[in-house]
Image (cartoon, rainbow, N blue to C red; front, top):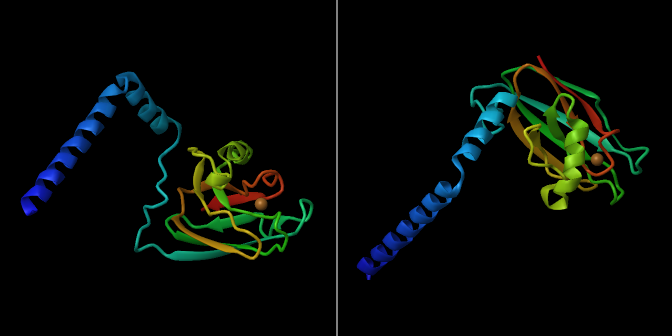
Length: 180
Ligand SMILES: [Cu+2]
């Protein structure tokens, strides 16, 4: 019985390795090199998962409020953090109207509109957050009364923006995120 299991496992492994190898080989060489080069050239890589266990953790709470497109807002227009810290950001959605979902998306300076516009295309399944190098990190979409928490390393010193990418919200729900 054990021999049969091992043989089966062996076959599965062989199949997996073969199929992966085929896929990589099918890609044109030019395409593989270019996509990597472009990524490196445009922006320094930011890894939201690379949390330094020794870094100080800075808790930040931001409240989203208002029950209409006119009233809706974040309670802060500017957030400042120190470089080298770990940010623990809590988004509280204090609205009570079902039409007011909000998220909090950290993006590179000057890209809030572009990210929010691409977010509409990304759709509800992706929480209106596009797969984009402009996006550093994002909370999930919170409904009225809900809270979302994300923990991430402060990006390199500089100016960034935060924005809610729920369709129609970005132009009011945005702010500056400054790393000193
Ligand atoms: Cu919103």
